[in-house]
Length: 344
Image 1 (cartoon, helix red, strand yellow):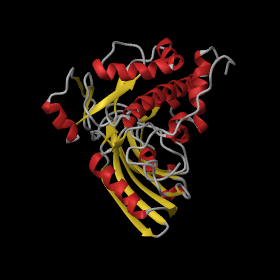
Image 2 (spheres, rainbow, N blue to C red; image 1 turned 60 degrees about the vertical axis):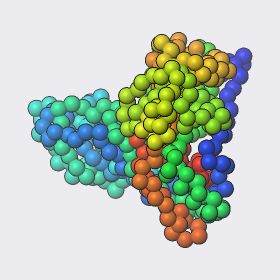
Image 3 (cartoon, rainbow, N blue to C red; image 1 turned 180 degrees about the vertical axis):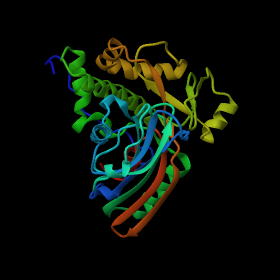
Image 4 (cartoon, rainbow, N blue to C red; image 1 turned 90 degrees about the vertical axis):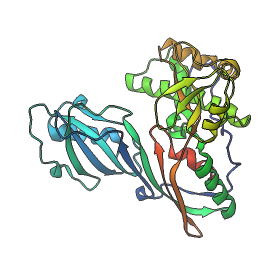
């Protein structure tokens, strides 16, 4: 990175329900982190694209996609998936393979120790990024230590009130290096197309987390303020409000709608009043990242500041093992829940 650019160190973003008292190990084994994707629609059963539900262990998404292309004798770009999943986990994930006018190969022959096809069905269109309704998780925390009553209290608060919708640490690379590589790229460093996308995402996610952190500190992350744009729960729909009336305040309190924060980029401002002042103050402190995103023509968007954690259950298997199960909508991070109950 050019010497005249100040490196960014990822902060510990403020907690919503107090600093966690618990500690423990996650991913001691792949089976300790189980994720299952849920599609936002049902494949029709007919069409040129084969949708495959695959269970994989210890393999990353792109590796499985490459193996599918080789097995089906198609181009890499003819294989699609809805989202990336962690390697060190057991994940059930959807892929699609474009096979126009071709019969299906014997998908059971694709099976290996680390991956197997659970289900195959045809559909008219390829699987696109982000078309999930969400992900179901089962996590095991080993060597757990801490204040059990306090951890249960924090979990109960998350279940009732939701959690701050921070981007997870994996979004930023090891030690947050992708944010600094974004700064270097904005200053003229040449990077490949794939890395460019990662760095742009990291920069935008960092700015969002900083905006959310500001509202957590002010205790308004889950409150309606003047000038907010709101997102409907479990929907991509948004609406603006200059001043929150009684109805908006009620719907925010009931978690039917959520205040949003900026995913920075080019485009018209979509907030005003207090929200605009708050977000502009954060952007002003991070001008290199903000201007770099605009220079790379990244489009502005919004993201909910809060997320409802569905079906959250916990069980202390013994004094040293905590088991969690829950469902999160697409785009939200299990690690953002874990950080509220386990010290980083």
